[in-house]
Length: 499
Image (cartoon, rainbow, N blue to C red; front, top):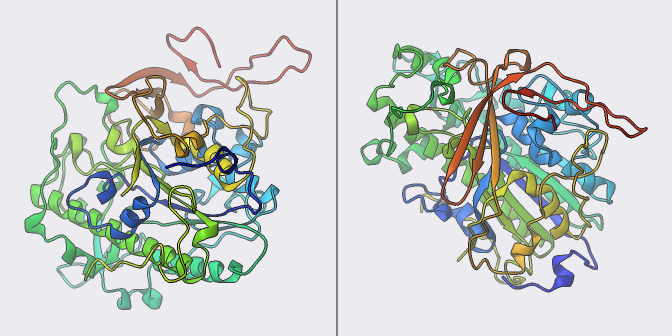
């Protein structure tokens, strides 16, 4: 990848559009990340013309805290959002978001599907009108996602984990990600000839559970070709506090029938293989929707003017360490794909006769960055590459600073090929627990119930995780300046200061 300083800093005659795609619960099980089993041709094709960050990490492996952290570029200890039950603007600070920054710089911004976590965590509005030019779109069929929609062996409908369906038999004859893709295509078409640049965020619900997906995708992964996780057992020396008992999976009807013991299980081997089969099928289904979006960029003549960012909020354990969920500090839960296509930078401008992203149907040369990066880095990086001057880095205490970022811009990665390890690049993640042993609410404790916080540091070769006592009560720490501010901070055993 070679790019002039002028282009790198984003000093362009025209601002780049941004197509920001975020998947839900997607680990790095993609062909471009070296998974030999997965069929992800469209994302792999995007990666072949993009910069691929091999070691990108979420700051907390659960939806609302991770998405809020990524979109504000503030760590969970700054947003104070560890669960789904508070809105950062009223709970912590009026922090600006990535789409809000684009909107303030003249962009049309729109949200389709799950971008912010819906509900209290985004003020029941997906942070509209702060972040978006129009109200966020949510697919109507999502309201059936946790209902009894899965036909069981008894011929009746159940609320199962494994839920491959005939789409024509579903309400409205569709599924949430199909609807979201249709709406995104409509918005792209409506903005294709506009002089106003756009920031379109598309959030896919898959491969999040339940695996309610078109049944034909299971054919890509015959059960006799599936294998167990390479490390399927709970490590003997694993501290009990580090283990998550995958409570949300246990609530599904087909899992309840298994009478799996709490907290460690295990799940029967044949069902483990079924979970892995359905997860992979869900990824391929989501990949096809990405392909539809990329193909549309070509068809509408938008490829040369649109940056594409693809990532996920966190990963998901497919039996590694005996877990079937996120909710931990393990690599499989915190590591995510991060792929960035910048026209004219990561790939040459395409010619009208040669589309950059021809759609690939699974039924019929990437640049790689290995240094540690964080989802916090997305905000400053995307801003710079789109042609905007990125926000300043946050001061040590930033609760009263609306616009700043705690992440670092990765724009230099698009100019200079990575030559060696950068030992200074670290990735930090954290996860709360209600106790030092597995509990029914270990996956998602309410703020008032958090008693332990696991802080995890990832280097090139190691992960170091420290579990500390945590008090959710807040303390007032006043500065010595006349403009005294209140700093919210956890009380941590062994920590002499509160930052």
